[in-house]
Amino acid sequence: MKLLYTNFHGGDGGGHTTYIRELAAALASRHEVHVAAPPGSRLNREAHALPGVFVLDQPFPNGLNKWKARRRARAQLAAYLRKQNFDIVHVNGSADHRLVLSAMPAKRPALVWTKHNSKPVRGIGNAMRARRTDLVIAVCEYTRRELLHTAYRHCRVETVYNGVDIERWSPWPSEAVTAERARWNGGDDSLFLLGSNAGTASYKGWMDLMEALPLLSDDVRSHVRVLIAGVPPKVAELERVAELGLAGQVVFPGVLADARGMVASLDAGFVLSYDVETISFACREMMAMGKPVLLTNYAGLPENIDEGKDGWLVPMRDREAIAAAVKRLVAQRDALPAMGVAAREHAEREFGLPLFVGRTEDAYERLLASK
Image (cartoon, rainbow, N blue to C red; front, side, top):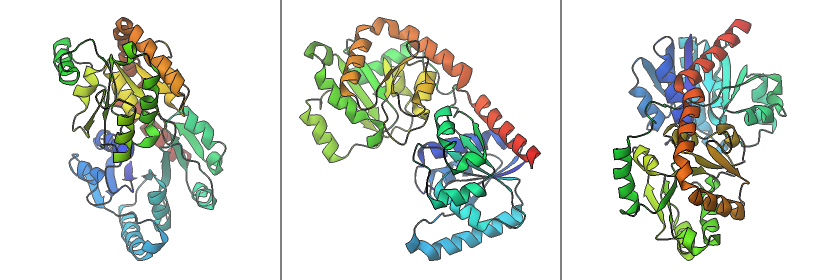
């Protein structure tokens, strides 16, 4: 197959970048893979480093006031599509979806769209795009069910769960974990380390955890330290953390080039999202490293765990429920390593990249066979 992946993000791109990079890296050995991404973006940079992957420096201008830039971008993309004669173009967001459709040649390739977030799908724009989209990939069952109530219900809709590199995100030896824990607990191993590499966007729900901790008794709260990797929080958020009396109890290490050390140090992970999230790469990475996870019952997050075996669920934005869950985690600390083993086994069964890539490739082949 000849494949083109597109992504509109000009910066980091988050999960979109991870998703496309892993597919491109795996499929380039047996298919011709191209990536179209804005110059300067993380995806553009990382795709250039992938052996056998062709990269197009392609902007995806968005907004009515950018019509001139959009016209130039459309002309460039249209010429590329005509020249390359792709079998499949796989888009990953509204901006690239729109531009690709406007640039399609008369003999058009099959069009695949992955729905990466839980934002509502409505409006005339989505209805028009749905009419010309051949396959929609949902990254969890929650997303697939939601799409069946939208204009995309008339498309082929398949669930392909996101995968993570479970070889890279694997449990560390006990000696390395002990050393890493000392980095974060200051040598006080009585501290319970609860953390997340899911970032500090407000919808990630980390502030709900901050609001929940003061509900704990002093003897429990004093033993909890929270680690949250990602872009440093806004000044107002840091001020709120201080108002809650948590400034010395919460660590924001910033964006980590490699978050595995922090994750290795944890007793348990958390992702408490209440918006945008679908399945969470971060959740799956923490589980692959042998960490049980505390999750909200939002969107596809519950699909990551066997509740009570390798993780726990709380109602989203329910501070009292979050506080109660943290109290239980601290109380059952000795049982958490066994739950971590279960989390790793779950990851080995269901989260690996070969399974993710194979299911995506199978979906492509079924689509082409049906056309």
